[in-house]
Image (cartoon, rainbow, N blue to C red):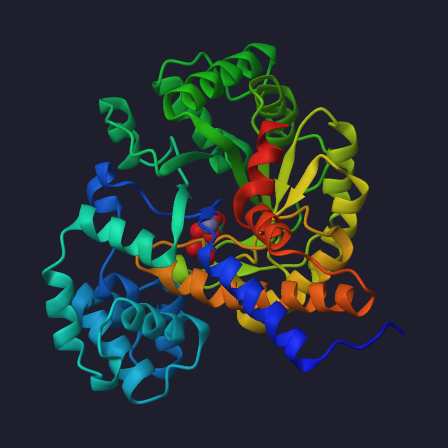
Length: 418
Ligand code: HDL
Ligand code: ZN
């Protein structure tokens, strides 16, 4: 048993850590945000905050409105219903609801008045580009990784037209259809001029490789990513695995890009909820263990959706140094689970992981997603330093700053560089 530290020492360490975490700019390594050049794909403002698909799932539990009737409402009407049901008729205690309150408060709006009209008036007076800067500064986020799909019909033409990049935004290349729906993806690649066939033969593999080289260069992708169903198996004999091993992983290896795998999604569990209808499932991580072992020359990023898989994922990262785990994704992005996951990761992996990404879909969400997570990361890290202090190891403020910078993007950037 070490020598217990005084309450004053504990409070001093906590204050030093909180200051360092609050002051450290974040690299948000997975979001669904877009830089302003993408126009209406960049979502921001109170109505977008309120109709976030997390809130849609919650309001349809508190309202007996039929799904079709809800979807027939305009976006402002949906937002108004969500405000009434989840904020006025019931206290906004869920993480998604509390987030809206945190965001409005940090933007300087008087939430005590509960006046949606006044909030809407304020947002109506904001200009998109200036608002993006204001939100990023308020959230202290200095770099945002987008989710960019060549299969998105609205997004793709913007890349083809070309635009001056906003250096605060980096691209993440999302390739789900390539691995999960080759019949559909192959038709698109053919239409784009790649000589691919439905049958994944050697010629098709080399053409998919050429497509990946072209697209990664066009968007200057930081990494490639895919979300995978709980039953993804490896090794396996199917189109997706053939394309993964024959084209995607060689492309990532040779271009020095990590491959991000996000397992555990069960799409359209309740299709009537549209984007809010996706669910989750526990994965057999043995497939990923096999993949990591079979491809030691590739670097992999992973975040998994089921809380039940988190401990096993930490152990996997201990076994394979070509795996960097990140974030409390989606249904795990709630304080009770973030705390559990961050403690587990720090105790098993030290500082060699990235505790959080926002997954933000609406620009303003950066404020609450990072406020709420910074508070937890600070608490956990301070606890670990206090444990060390009780054994005589006193971390210095420069060491705290260094460790925090690692957790908020530094370790990820070093991992990407390899
Ligand atoms: O597949 C993903 O990247 C998920 O993050 C989904 O986009 C999901 O709809 C989401 O936004 N989760 O937070
Ligand atoms: Zn996402």
